Length: 118
Length: 111
Image (cartoon, rainbow over all chains, first blue to last red; front, side, top):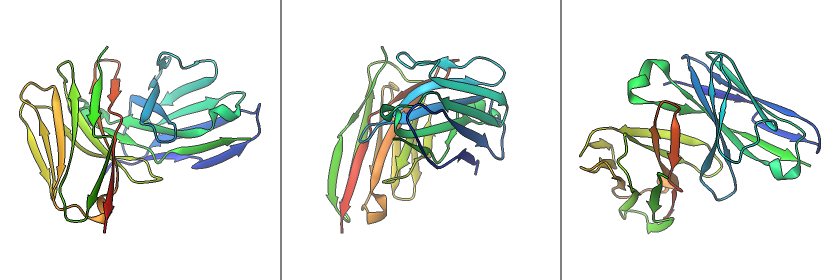
């Protein structure tokens, strides 16, 4: 089946630094990728929709200047958490929409990145 | 706005018992997807339903999409300890990929 990878899987950083998370679709092309955040004991929260070659669409309440998203190719989207603070500590998950399956809207999730900000 | 309500929030069953989780929407859904997230893991896609009244089976799992496309259910027959995790429903719709998640049902199975 389709595989989506994320790197790194875990990252610990100091407050004030920036962290970049990569999301790659390994065996398919994805014009659209989604970024989620999961708080403990909560459901996934959609942060933004990343479209290849255009600006990301952010959900209400998500700071676009803090969570920078770049979707430079059909297989790669990056999320950069700028000037990270402890409250940004969370599990970040991406998903990619398989272009070949647009009619059925199939998405595949990455394994997630655990960010801890000290 | 459009919401998907998922119930129950938690379910504790004895191994061998059946389990059902429900997702209900106030508006018609274009599709419904189900995911399973193991403790500490990421959501794994299980299935997608798009047709009114659709029923799909995966071994002990049965997925249904209501006739009015406003509700869906996931039923597990004879639960096993490997079924533990949180089951999410998700509506994926719109040109911008508007995503609406249910809050998930956390299933625990006592051996």
